Length: 255
Image (cartoon, rainbow, N blue to C red; front, side, top):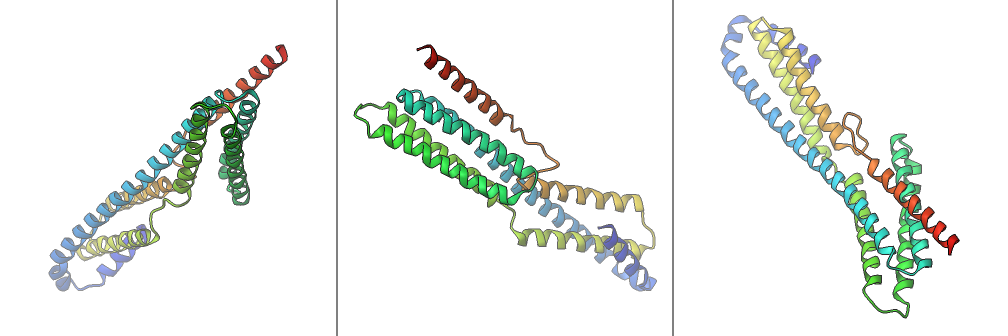
């Protein structure tokens, strides 16, 4: 942006003084309109990015709640089915933590493999539900577990959609960058027509717009660097499932 401001300023200085005075009012009005439109586009982009961030957060919390519901629902199954379901859930939670580590390291191959593995664990959880539903004992307990598994699958799909597909459209980014650069040219051109400028003021404005654009870009990315996303809930859930399985084994040994 600073480079385009300098280019506009040098272009404005080449105009004769009489022509510069005639263009001054028009250029000032165009500069105000361009900066106002750029500010509007930045606000629009920030709103979309914020919505995408909130969607990812909600999908993450929904998945946590669905896993906890599946864990609670497994307690209503027979002992063997409950232990199998809890072991699969523990593997799934550990896999989720590994996916986060793979995302941090930008290992796309590992991310894809672990997502497929997670979907396989969903199938195993559903197989436990199918076996439980095919039993001879009637009641709503099995239905509660099956519904929790379906909610867990739906939450996973919603999270993948929020992470992989919720993005600001490329045409919006192109328009935003083009408007920013053209606005900086007009601002520098207006300063060149007057023959005077304040480097501090113009560079501060360019820095302000650049900072907001960087925030919008980072907020729209799933693997954010400027914003923090608390993943401790998944780690706490792993500890809870591990402790529950250990207690279940102790009870079985005592019996």
